Length: 59
Image 1 (cartoon, helix red, strand yellow):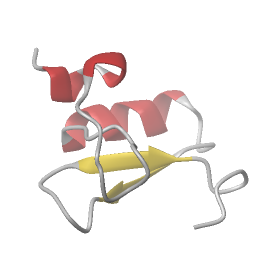
Image 2 (cartoon, one colour; image 1 turned 180 degrees about the vertical axis):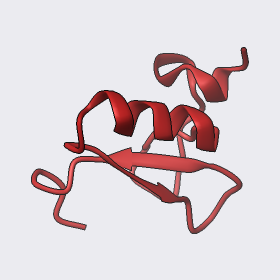
Image 3 (spheres, rainbow, N blue to C red; image 1 turned 30 degrees about the vertical axis):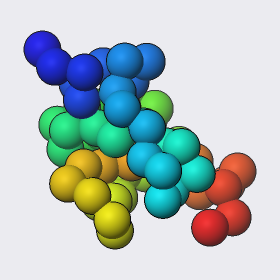
Image 4 (spheres, one colour; image 1 turned 45 degrees about the horizontal axis):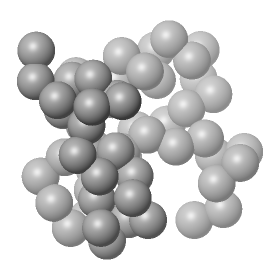
């Protein structure tokens, strides 16, 4: 398991306000566990995925 698979150890994206850069599988697992409260999106500036809460994040 790499840092990109563990949220707390994931590298942070400088262009996306320090969001965790995750592997697609890790991001999707978080979305699944949140029962739809989180959404996964590909990072526009790096090879990775971010998760965010659409009801809280206004971006």
